Image (tube, rainbow, N blue to C red; front, top):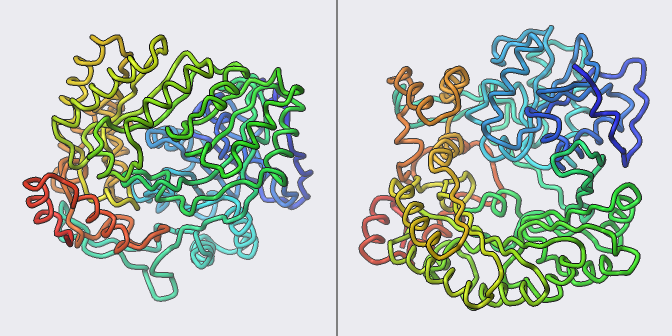
Amino acid sequence: MTNSPFAAERLLFTPATPNPDAIPTIFAFPNEYNVGITSLGYQVVWATLAARSDLQVSRLFTDVHEPLPSQPELLGFSVSWELDYVNILNLLESLDIPIRASDRTNTHPLVFGGGPVLTANPEPFADFFDVVLLGDGEILLNTLVAAYKEVRDSDRPTQLRHLAQVPGIYIPSLYEVTYHSPDGAIATIQPVDSTIPAQVEKQTYRGNTLSASTVVTGKAAWENIYMVEVVRSCPEMCRFCLASYLTLPFRTADVEASLIPAIEQGLTVTDRLGLLGASVTQHPEFDSLLDYISQPQHDQVRLSIASVRTNTVTEKLARTLTQHDTRSITIAVESGSERLRQIINKKLHNDEINQAAVNAKAGGLSNLKLYGMVGVPGEETDDLEQTVTMLRGLKKAAPGVRLTFGCSTFVPKSHTPFQWFGVNRQAEKRLQFLQKHLRSQGIDFRPESYNWSVIQALISRGDRRLSRLLELTRHYGDSLGSYRRAFKELRGQLPDLEFYVHADWTPDLVLPWQHLKGPLPQNTLLKHLATATSLFNWEHQASLEQQLSVPA
């Protein structure tokens, strides 16, 4: 394999010179280089490891790698997308490492993983990893290396038991899961003995210096972009949203002490700047950040910004973006129905959406991208009609602005109040309803694949019995038909697709991630769920509260 992409990189940190006894380490991203190097999480973790003289770090992607050690001791994966599990298994095989942790011996490296997918619910992948890091890398990486060094010369079982004592480090093989029947629900999740913690708690970095790019390259999917994390988490707490609930509390970067110095460093190597975060414009000093970027010396800077909260789209924001070579802005509205937005805790009104469109146009933006969702718990046909009405009104409010409406299907996510709801079977028809009524209005409607939402839900709510299914589907292909075929082949060995994807789960069910502690306790999530269901239409609410056993 050629290492040509690495030659084009401009580094914003200084890699250390490894010591003679440095730990040979491979840090992998299970996708192509141009995708992986665009991940801010991957960049930051790699730089953190490469800046240590006690590690010798080589990067590995599916299409290219740096020179790899013949006997690595640590092999890490940054996992940002569920279906990349196929590439993880392929990369393990290419390195002659057994794909199941139980088949590895002292001669194999410890395989660790982290990132949003594994922090949310590692269980479908539990059999493939020796070690899973739950939470923020700022805390976990250095503690992992320090703990490993203490047992570097020990055998594998000793190493794993030692690592299991470190907060946030999860060793799946040291937890036993029992089931009511082979294809039934989970009965218990217990550590193998009393020396292993009963729960593993996600680690949360609480500082106000957030991440920034460590490498800039023209070979990235976003060419030559320098990324700065402005905020982490989101204060809105929409009931379905993993990006808010899993990453609480909401944290903001210090503008003077960290954000501006980081931006100034990045602008020494590129003129393309990306501001990242789930709710960037809710930074309390966002206005002063805009003033800084609007200074004459930054006239040539091309600015990109992540999805912004609707009621923060001011004419000033739009004008700043326009002056810096951005023509569109993205807002998440979820629905045109006020009632449905109340159910999901989206604190937003239609007049604010209209005002955002008016401000976007006044500031010179030509495109407005909106994100919506169908199949949200409590949704009815009337809610869909209100979405169509809202978008028609938007077209009138800001004539000449090109409207794009991207729409996904609700997928239950762990550690959120809506984790107990299944995927609505009518969601595909609801996407078709919106397509029929919006395209005729000249609104660019872009639905996300319903079948992909089903696969996402399966992995999102899966337990470790899914590992056998994932091994099979790897060979069958990543279509929904392949998953159905694998379920058929494994009938009697795990619950059916219906249970994982579409069923509404009762609060007394043992969740696959019950032993992994997120930011909020289950009782709090149930209270948030009860608040949401209290806003359902009465007939719906009666049947659902009975079904879900949710306290009124």
